[in-house]
Image 1 (spheres, rainbow, N blue to C red):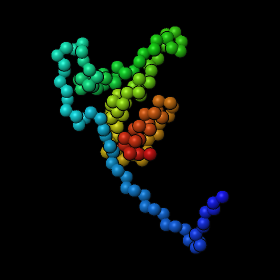
Image 2: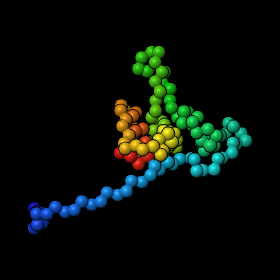
Image 3: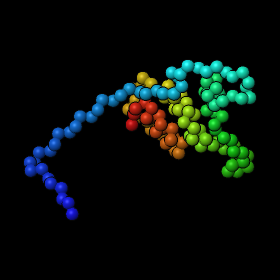
Image 4: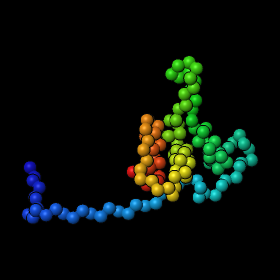
Length: 128
């Protein structure tokens, strides 16, 4: 069994300096040139739908499940939105655009959806 050697002196090693905090890193479709609409609307691809209306693209990914868990309740399933990288990036961009330039220390999010979007938002804004 290998043993670790301890330093001879009783002095503690100096702490490493913490790296400087970077600014927010907004990403997404803002820097891309907009695409033109296709001639035949019934043959529209995902990229064209994204360029025409990013909010509609993200909303179309949210699935409605009627009568779940009880009759009369309309459940909105976010799983398809979370599975689509472009859709999730659009939502996180929309959330982060409100806070860019604000003096924030951390993002706090509660409940199941809050954990998912809060973590992505903190990553995008380079916060804890």
